[in-house]
Image 1 (cartoon, helix red, strand yellow):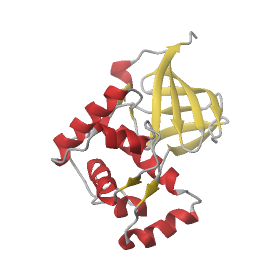
Image 2: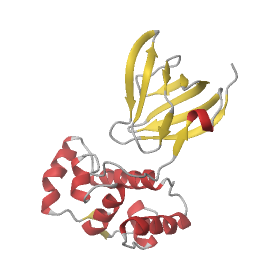
Image 3: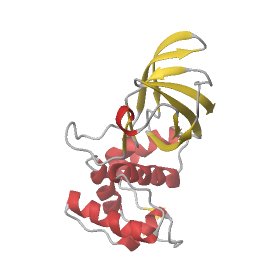
Image 4: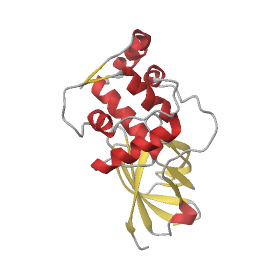
Length: 211
């Protein structure tokens, strides 16, 4: 898929190139932000219809589900994605336009309601339940809830967190960075640790692990 990039976003693209991101990876990153903002996992044809309505409700502009399918790669067509379309997706997530998204800046919206998947741990799960955290690039961490907002790492891949580490966390938001505090790493108090600072984390609630 080919994307039209305006001169205004050329400087910003140079920044992303230094991070070794391809054009396709940039758009996939934007798609992940859209999914996190909408609170949806886009996997089925009908999902694109629902997403189109969510975008319309927030921006006042209607994108066709077919256009969204092309951007997500659900339809394998060699088409050009208009910058105006990417602008709209970025605006839906809180950026002024696609060029601002390319800079990596935090969206300009400072306050307001957010439409994201949220796990309030003391309300939504019980001690012994597990949660699988995932963030870019290929970071995976399985954690077990101990109660009173405390967690224990059961298994971890590609991250400095290790099995046996414990920490505090009361809320997990899909698509947002996860800040954990009171981290005990290798039996040493280690303060605050952030997961997914740039791309945010995703999570799934798993099964029960007894004591």
